[in-house]
Length: 295
Image (tube, rainbow, N blue to C red; front, side, top):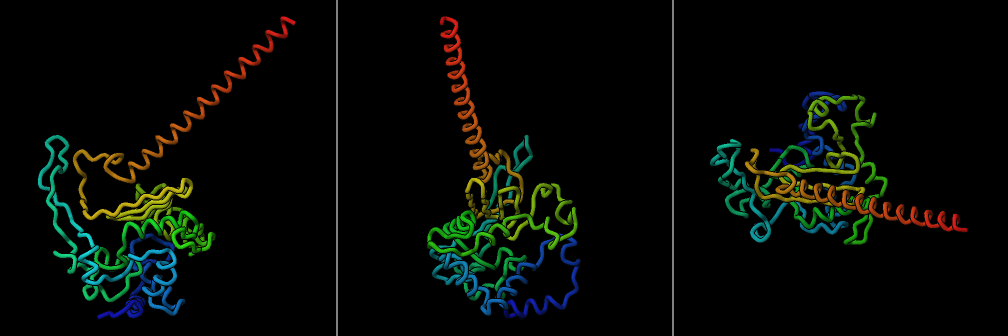
């Protein structure tokens, strides 16, 4: 039995590396190891460090590694997996589903209830995926994302949690840093067609001024427009769905569509104003020319 993050990382250190850092991108226990690094540097267990240095200063009162059975009964939503029951005759895509709860049959039997969770405080790697690590709320995720948008300043508590330079460093593409990798086309990342334009940063995926991280739930941040989008779904379907339209049925897609329409509207209004000014200017010059000829 591995009782904590310290023992877990000590056991992990006995295994040979699959590849050296910077040679390839692959899901791993890397973030869990960073969690242990934080414990060593701070001299605190990971949960206490996060609570005192990040969560409380940002006002994130709902985010924790463990819930009591009573908290689970009052606040915890179930997590369901959708299984197709039938398909559309034309598209051949699923159009009806049955739902099965995966996070315990009752809230108090959830994997996040104290005594039922893994004893190792997962730092965010693949250990305990969907069955451990931090559990949070929509409110807390909004507070976190807004602190990033405001470059480390938490508006709710009026405290600076991170320095501006730290946030800027966290938001840029680390795959372009020579200190991270010298590979121009990193194996495991750029050979995935969906990642051709994406970069990676400590907060997740990055593309231009946008950041994104998610799986079943997700959040995205546009640093330029200061837009935050958060989606915490309590169901998951791994199949394409008949009639699904990203611009309508997906929150992220709907927001992007709205932003595009808004920008086009502003450009149209700006163009119309320039046209009116040009017409007024032309009329003025014509009038002046006529008066000169009469004189």
